[in-house]
Length: 144
Image 1 (tube, rainbow, N blue to C red):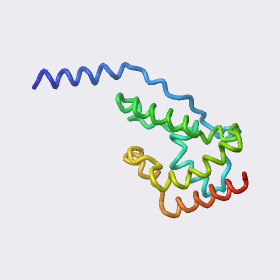
Image 2 (image 1 turned 90 degrees about the vertical axis):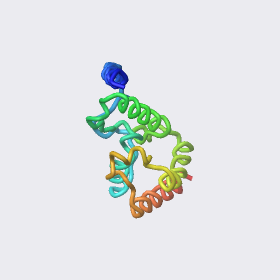
Image 3 (image 1 turned 60 degrees about the vertical axis):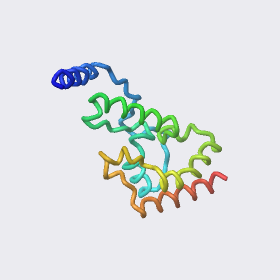
Image 4 (image 1 turned 45 degrees about the vertical axis):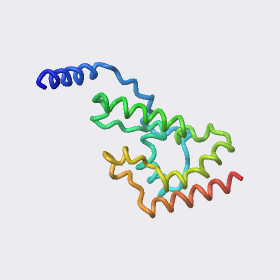
């Protein structure tokens, strides 16, 4: 049992030397970022931008493997699916699809429960969800 514990500790120490190449971040708002009313923008900043923009804030624990790998994967997947920082570069058809999916996504799975474990402030209240739903519906209507 003691050998197993030592082995686990050595593996944990060893994996710290595996570098995490984090996706590139931009510290300030990008020119082609999504535009939304101030109240909705505040919700997106707080609850969505860590994974769905180039404005990720990496907390201290995201530098510790294997958490770093998990964090990197989620950010890459979030940005690959939809990146609010590159919103203006999307074709209107793609924007429309995203806007139509956002209300259902926030109702069923977003933000991810695994993210909310360490980011309780990102939890969406019913009022937050309603504000995003109204904004997304109006923005989609404007694109149609």
